[in-house]
Image (cartoon, rainbow, N blue to C red):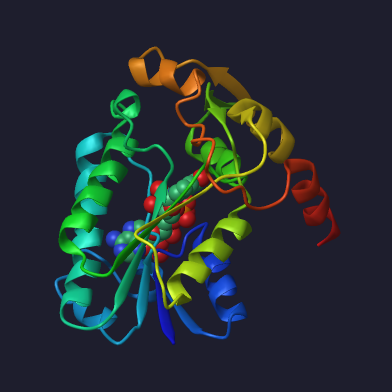
Length: 246
Ligand SMILES: NC(=O)c1ccc[n+]([C@@H]2O[C@H](COP(=O)([O-])OP(=O)(O)OC[C@H]3O[C@@H](n4cnc5c(N)ncnc54)[C@H](OP(=O)(O)O)[C@@H]3O)[C@@H](O)[C@H]2O)c1
């Protein structure tokens, strides 16, 4: 089995590790390895794989460029699967398509990416997770303003990225793939609590309630998974303890 992970950021190496642990060959492809999903020839380079896992991402301030980027990436991968037997696994976010959070451009773009993927990709599995434990660190870097970092007020049920990567690898290598798989972590907390527990004290995290409909929805639990969502991975304290041992 030959697997490509397109993206290769925070999630890329974790997914590669989980796939290789299961005995499959796995290549991570992104601009830093000379692969750009926006290139005209990008699809041709994916047809040699049995499975392509789509895990691209970026920092976007507005909905339009985010939507443009995510849907271009998805169309590139879908084109590769049209002309070969390649399967497509798309990494996405639990509840990104809820009406009350669609004012948030990034989620609107992820929801549009899922919609386009369902339309154009013939052998598609979507794996959605809640926010990762690692998300607090990503947010701290992305939202840094001088000595502080803005932490949107939100209730989340975060999950260890390694556990999400296991789910993705299982789905990618399964001979009975699902259309949609959702996973979440075991505990509910605020992003500010997660940030305090997992990130360095500087830049200082400052919790801010976003004064919009989606900001209110974030604080009211719109990002919490449905109760039937499978729980994967350790509780936060065990995850922190295991990292200290490494
Ligand atoms: N963070 C979370 O908690 C969370 C939860 C659930 C789902 N997700 C989803 O998981 C996906 C991956 O997230 P992540 O945090 O791992 O992403 P990330 O750390 O932002 O990394 C994304 C990678 O995409 C690559 N990339 C960007 N533009 C590209 C292009 N034009 N062509 C090829 N590669 C490109 C970049 O590598 P180069 O610079 O080398 O190109 C970058 O390393 C995202 O779609 C995100 O929405 C995230």
